[in-house]
Length: 204
Image (cartoon, rainbow, N blue to C red):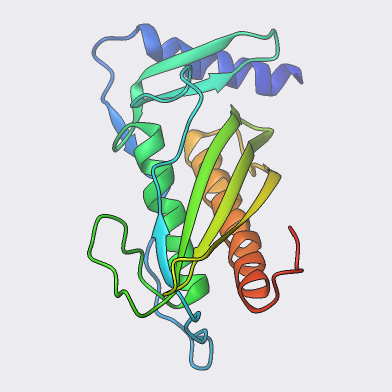
C-alpha cells in the first residue's frame, strides 16, 4: 500500500477506537433516478423471485468490514450498513434485477399459476472491501425456471466482479460495491432472458 493511502487508512481505522465518533450508515441500494425516455426495458416473459442471498459469516453483519494489506480484517464499529450485509445485498440485487428485467420481485408474495417463474439463488463466496483500491464480489448463482406445467430446468453459473474505487473514503468504496451489484444484475438478467428463450443458452 502506498505510504499516503496507508496513512489515510490508518487514520480511518483510528476512528474505531473513538467511542464519541458519530455513527455513519451506508446502503448498497443506489439512489432512484428518473428513467430516461426510451430507456425502459421490455418486461421479461416470466415472474421473478429473488431468494435470500448467502454471505460469508465474517462480513455478514451491520458493521463495515474492510480488508487490510497485511491480511487482517478491520471491523468499523462507527460505519455500518443500514441492515445486515446479506439483507442489504439481496435488496440491492433485487432492485437492480427489477430494472433490468422490467418485472417486480415477488419473493414471499402469491405467484400467478399461469405464468412461468424464474427463481434466483445466489451465494456470495467473497465480499472484499479495500478502501482506496477496490470492491470485489465473487458469487455463485443459479436460475430455476418453472413453467405452468410445473416442469423445471436449472442453470448454474458463477461471476466475479471487481470495481476500483476513486478515493480512499468509505463513500467511494460503497459506491464501488453498488456498481459491482449493478454489473452482476446486468449479467444475470441478460443470461435469464437468453436462457428463458433458448434452453441451450449458457452462462454469461
